Amino acid sequence: MSAEPTSGRISLTARRKRYGERTVLAVLWLCAAVSVFTTVGIVGVLFFEAFQLFRIPGVSIVEFFTDSAWRPFTDPSSDLFRIGVWPLLNSTLLITAIALLVAVPLGLGSAVYLSEYASPRVRKTVKPALEVLAGVPTVVLGFFALTFMTPLLRSVFGTDVVPIFNAASAGIVVGILIVPTIASISEDAMSAVPRALREGAYGLGASRRHVALRVVFPAALSGIVSAVILGFGRAIGETLIVSLAAGNLPPGDLPALNPFQQVQTMTAYIVQAVGGESPRGSVTFQSIFAVGALLFVVTFAINIVAQRIVRRFREEY
Amino acid sequence: MATTTQERRVTPVHDLRSSRRRAVTEQMTRAVLLIATALSVIVLATLLIDILRDGAGRLSLDFLTSYVSRFPEETGIRAGLTGTLSLMALVALMTFPIGVAGAMYLEEFAPDNRFTRLLEANINNLAGVPSVIYGLLGLSVFVYILGFGRSLLSGALTLTLLVLPVIIVAAREALRSVPREIRDGGLALGATPLQVAARQTLPAAMPGILTGMILSLSRAIGETAPILVAGAIAFRRADNEPWYPLEAYTAVPIHIFDFVKRPQQEFQIEVASAAIIVLLALLLLMNSGAIVLRNRYSRNR
Image (tube, rainbow over the protein chains, first blue to last red):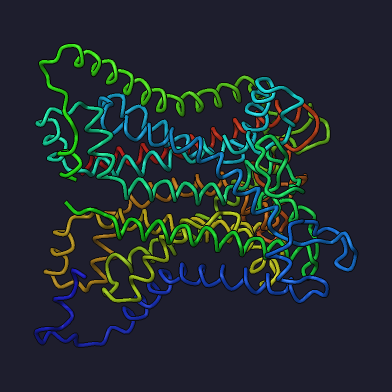
């Protein structure tokens, strides 16, 4: 953009046409467009492969969205075969709800503390620690859920109440995973609130708590809400923690609300079904993509909503 | 905003009793917020201590140089280590040129039109797509449609698509931080925009780009879901080398996933912890490399 003046407003036409440069620019453009190809690829592949599922005799798209049992590993012609996605969706939402229950108070508490209370020195040590937490591979957090959180829950609530694989343990650790996302985005939003607002409130005699919770927090609300929604999106797509700690049993009775039960999220199903290396064209193989397509649509919608909220409710100072 | 502050009843300062109460609530709020903040740090510390305590005893040179086995005392992660390093090399090789070129286009040459805005929105949206979805893309396109099979190349391509948006964003930031004067100076001397971008802007942004690159790569090698779906196998007893891209492959996170899923306690706890220590050490190494690079660069400027 800064280059515009040279492109010939005054007659400075190049003696030779620079075909080489045009080629290079085209290549650069192509590289930038790879992201568009990726998106087109994702959408195309997911829906194409998902569509193949519903062409298999005995598999109906109506059942997929309405039936309440998920037993895709039997032959489609048998009576046992049921392919309703609700148990998976229910499991995902249960885990996500637990995760948000953990992550919203922790994340927002950290954000308020870091932005309004903490000394620069505390901020300088805590922020990198949160970044490290955000950088821990999720397979490690899955290990942590199964070998630390689950035994902890079992010793607190009793081994007869809490099975080895349960939604609570996975949900809590997914919550811990998204704390840094929520904390850092909402802290940015709070730090962006102008000083004048705070000083005005202090001048009127408000305490620090009032300034933090009643002036800065509402002023940064659009950023905070979008932070929570982004965390929500991350929790829905989380794969390793749930497939290691939450189990692989789609709940039979819906709605499944008990946190101490084995569940199977959409992502955990994808991992489980992929492990069998079933051939392309089989119900198992194509169902992975149908579940993936649904997951994609849900997360995509969530991200769009988050962006809308930021754009619509942002307050300009 | 102003309305909210006006509506608040402000406790008169001369009222001693309520000012004491106010001090108490102040302290309590501070304490609650501090606990919320400390909790994540405590969890992180617990996680690290737990892993070090369980895994340190199992860690040895043999663990790094032997292949996986059914016996916990004999098993190692050699195949995964070579797989992870090979993936890293291939991903770096593919993302660097594409990422830098894409960032350069968007930052230096893109006209301000609808298509450019679409590109930018698209890159932001891709960052929100769950990584397991990239695995599905890889499984369908690379493994089957292009026929690469469940190979190292399929895994590397999948991870490339996953980190490319991150790298483009990081590279754009690095390019943006190059002072305008450098570009203007080049243009004033008669260089074409492309020459300025290639010979002035890009070298000046290079340390920033490399930092972003290392950080994105460290994210890529910690990812499990995409390569798990795109065909990585846990039980492989052979090395991976980047110049044999069509071989079957595995990686350290895949080993960890496999160890944790095994029923024996030794695998689930000790062996898995040892593998996690190796993975975290690798990530730490890369991240400190990035930090050193960033610090040296900012001092020179």
